Image (cartoon, rainbow, N blue to C red; front, side, top):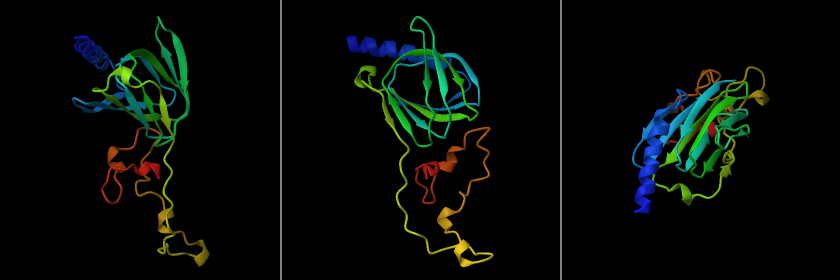
Length: 193
């Protein structure tokens, strides 16, 4: 009975919290198990007070960004500053209902995925876990080179060439999700190269 009451309270709180989110939060998947949102804070943007659910959450950072200040509302008034993030890093947080505003303190935007796990009880995760940017596997030197205008020593291996999608302006909006597919079509992030 207690588990049923806790689950009902959590669902009610989550429905209220998610309905009041600012435009910075775009839902890209919502099913029985997960709620996935793409979040964008512009440079020096202030995001007004809003609520988040008590579900355990994974944050996956999509770009290199600067610090972000998070100001929580009373009665537990406190501020924390999220340190700068790097593309591909992640953070796993235990469930905690919170009401806060956000201030991006940086000249860079902050883009990340917020993945809430609806079927994991908030009490099941006890601590925050952070993961750094995965290192790229070592690649063998490529025998294919670009034609050189002067000498062979100035030729650059094809693997060192600029990404195919280098024309996207990262300063104004996050890159489209379609960029995350590699040449074989798998869903690995091409940004974590």
